Image 1 (cartoon, rainbow, N blue to C red):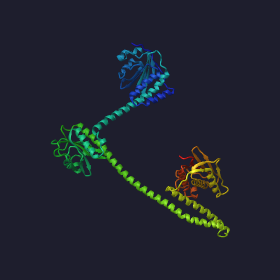
Image 2: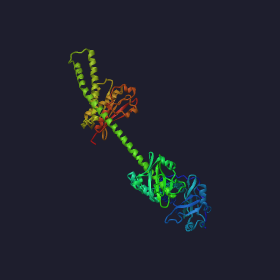
Image 3: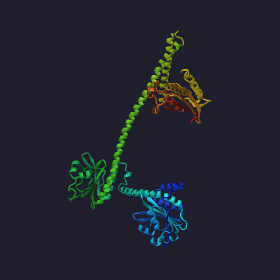
Image 4: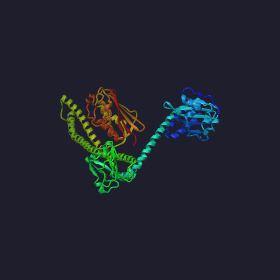
Length: 600
């Protein structure tokens, strides 16, 4: 008899207060194998508390079962033992932990004679015991039992950590067991299907599948022949790839649906019932069966169907010992698995047909779009070329009028000519943009990249643009030092001119236009900032598409064809750079040109 010490209860559910609990819990939750999880939990119990032994017991259906146990230096003999819960009457520590759902500690474990000889050699050595109940929902699902040979109490903080870890672990163990049970059930089902249709994976053609499937069914059911009968419109016929039949026999295995419905096959095809036929016997089967051959002695037919409706039936012929209930189950399982194959085949065929139709439609659409793009590009080039000549002539005459080559003009005529010259310049710029857009779309725009002083290009373009704007508008250049990039000077001039023109047009209320040039580690960046009307967020996604304009009334009133930003971005990307925008409605926009400083 082992002396018992008075049990003390650790007050309240203990709460861990350090990060080691979280780390330990996460390591347990990552384990999916129940055996590994149990083993890790009992070892962790020893590590957390410094006990000599840690035992995990489960409580299920009135049985206390030792799931795992660990003791330094040896493996306990009582792992796997089961004890009735009536033994709790001799173990007050266990009984108190279960009834209160709290950690309890005490001295010896209990009366050794009550628990069997496997515990007799170790119980007298135990001086201190702690029992940690582990909850599964509202019930106690397991116990962690810690024992120590030294007469040294367990520290409440250690037990608190173990309490927190253990409750997470028992939930993880429960989930792992559920997964294990589901996996076992799946394996059993898959094994049954594999015995019937192990050849399915090797079948490339549907007739081969039915030929092998009927041979398998005949072998499993002990039949001399087997066939799939398929509904085709107003007839039901045997598949030509059937087992145990000659081609001549298969040619005659076809009956009208009207005959089939009148002979009792309706309940098979639409009611899911099996049909049994025995020559010369009545009972619950018809004495005459339209799917039986003259030499048929017996047959068993089961429905073959999908969720969409009946496909036909699977029929086994001429069993030497007669068809049993197990044969019907095997055939139903065979019919169901082959229905899945049929359904997959039909679905794949439909997908292939839809894919072919969709690809054809997309190809026609792509060809139409390509033709429209070619027509648009041809129109832009044709219009640009045809307009450049008349524009040049008109500008020439206007220049002659303004410089006096055509004689003196009255003041009003001179003012009108100057306005006409300004508008013709705008028309020329638009035509140039149209031609450039057409060339870009056909990759005909040459790019001559070289070391280029971006600060010089900016100052030249700003000076040119400043001469055409009122003195009240200021164009400010911020460039403290020479800045060089690998770029096409002509393209950079076009981009900067477009961005300045855009900034002037979309800030009709005035304000300074600031151009900032800065050098970054790998790029040169150029900002064009205005204080105009800004760009709505809904318009920014399409801002750099050709012929795109804002839909707001304030924007529609501003002249432009919607090509400037498109050309700017395309020209920048052709040089290895880009154009981006930041904008706030009502406060202005910042367009940024980025160009590489060195070759990629």
